[in-house]
Image 1 (cartoon, one colour):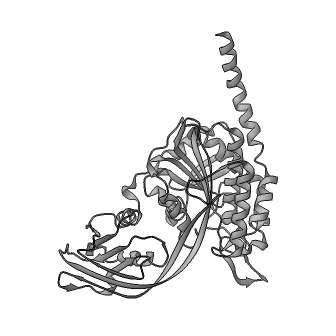
Image 2: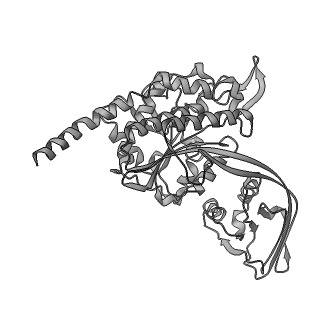
Image 3: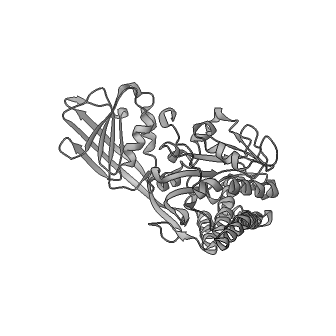
Amino acid sequence: MRRTSLLLSFLVFTAPLFSQKALKKITSAEASRIESVLSADSLQGRKTGTAGIEKAADFISNEFAAAGLQTFAGATGYRQVFTMVKPKQTSVSAKLDTETVEEKNIAVITSTADLKVNASSGFKKIQIKAGDNLFREAQKILGAKENTVVFVDTSFGKLFPNLQRVKRNIFQTPYSYVFILTQQNPKAFEVAATHQFEEQQLSNIVSVLPGKSRKDEYVIFSGHYDHLGIGKPVDGDSIYNGANDDAAGITAVILLAKYYKKLRKNDRTIIFAAFTAEETGGFGSQYFSRQLDPAKVMAMFNIEMIGTESKWGKNSAYITGYEKSDMGKILEKNLEGSAFKFYADPYTDQQLFYRSDNATLARLGVPAHTISTSKMDSEPNYHKVSDDLKTLDMTNMAEIIKAVATSAKSIVSGKDTPSRVNTADLK
């Protein structure tokens, strides 16, 4: 008994020391090393579909490999490869019973070039009724692997064009989805649509650190590694380096991956994800989210634009959607006694909670929040060629990453589980 007590005392005493030692690996020098690669001119602004973003993907993969992390199920190495399809609709028509539908009231989302659907085609029939949440219901339908015809109540007439815009880029899929704006629930219907397609392969970069006792419960740390690429020259500079947006977030993800790998104390499985195509519609995070059961995701820390001081100065950051779960309160509790403080998002008029890679899982109830310091009302380099390494405060950035690591400890360990996001008020 005495030996057991001594051993437990030793472990209790040494655990915080080991954690502090691991935190010391998160340094401004190491952050600068990663940032200098991701925001280099040689990557040409990391635009989706370019050679520059492929170089970034290789670099991030190599960093995950050097840390000794596992690959994600179904991925090719650390690359989670998926195909995006850009459709060009050449014709569309629909008839409900005997009524012909106007073209503007039909949205066909498909990877099939010549689609013909009728009541005998085996498509599932769904109604989105007045008072429903159009976006949430449409997301559920598009996430299901089932051919579907959806009759959308005419009360959504002003919002229906948003479904039309989904067609600009879609995931390659054998399933087709037809949305028709109508007050009917017809017995007979006929839909015909023809499309031409351009295909593009994209890759998220994903690694995994399996949990010890709760392997089927996931905590995600993420950011996006794409940016805007090359644009019109400004004072001779045409490369949008994206040092803060969002090489800073990816730097944090890599350093957190190495920290948790060294710590080896995560009872929950941790997933580290670098998303592509955030700037062109959030397609990387949308595809990633579809590969997970949202009920198994306990928390998501999406990290975006942490390279500059927040409006409160150093040692501070804000959490988007702070009021939508108690995750922020858990993080604050774990930071008690430190110099760092998290705040609620002060830019709620800009709807940041819905504009980053956390949004897809948040809409499914996951406590998925973005951590940022960007002064969205006055950030001088946002989406400009001037967003390069020299504009960042690397010392403060390292402290922010340490604060994320410290504040997440009870969630990663399984001691705390944030409340689910109430999806009733989500757009």
